[in-house]
Amino acid sequence: MSISEPQVAADADLPARPRRNMGEAVARYAAPIALVALFVVFFIATPKFLTTSNMTALFVSAAILVVMSMGQQLVITVAGIDLSVGSNLPWAATVIGWTWTHGWGTPAAIAAGILAGLVVGLVNGLLVARLKMADFIVTLGSLSVVSGLTLLLTGGNQTAVSSGFLQGLALNGIGPIRWFWLVAVVVAAIAAYLLFWTRTGTYLLSTGGNLEAARDVGIPVNRVRLLAYAGSGLACGIAGVLFVSNNGGSDPTMQTNLLLSSIAAVVLGGSSLSGGRASILGTAAGAVLLQTLLNGFTLLDISQYYQPIAVGVVVLGAAFISRFQR
Image 1 (spheres, rainbow, N blue to C red):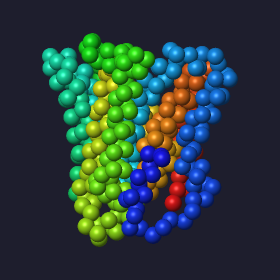
Image 2 (cartoon, rainbow, N blue to C red):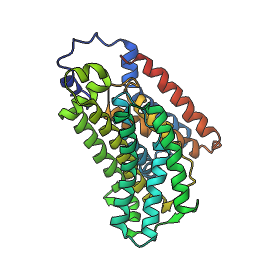
Image 3 (tube, rainbow, N blue to C red):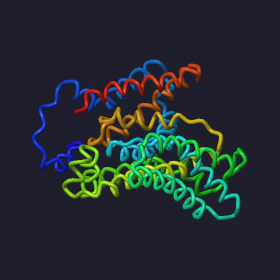
């Protein structure tokens, strides 16, 4: 049983769907198929790819994107988009660095960073759900505002965080299993439970599938959409903690491809940009695929200038694949 199959329960009252055509099947399983193919290609291309050290580094970096993509998954499920994740992660990481250097201590700094990401998500949700503003405009504005706040907080300076707990989060684990991976798995499991095994998940899927119909049957669509954006902000806060742990601090000027990657991971995973469909395993596979692509480029010593081109091509491919989603 796939993790997205419980969605059937959410659609129990809807007319039976037509049998999936070949194009929809390809769209649904594009990420796992492409991931396996990419592993084979890089294994053949370089003996360094499947080494223990490289696999560890790959999955540690992928954990950050997996967590962010889970939040983006919630928003896309309700037929929205969250562009602010591109600056929300640096913002959360910067808050962690700023509070830690001002003597807050590690637990308080982590809580502050997660809360900072959550607040951005809540503001986005309020503007979209309550004030009926276009999600693209709201989150694009948040992307710029939060980026500016991040620079103002630190003056554009990097912040080193020498917390033993955070360092251990990236370097240690249970046997060969890193804590980073466990955090990503727990976040994904919570997202799966929320979407496919709770009434809230039914509301999220129904709202994305048909907003007006969901409203007509009494679903509190405003609260549902607010929850989705809050979840995205919360995921950015958690990803900010992982970023600080992995990099030893925060960098308010960092440029990341996580915005495009989080959207591409969701669509590659079999979700539809028009909402109403979700796949947690697919999204996780899409996130790992994107990080595998960048990792392989690095091992093959391909210029870093080609990396954003590759990510862009994958995003366009994901958009094309989404055409086959019903």
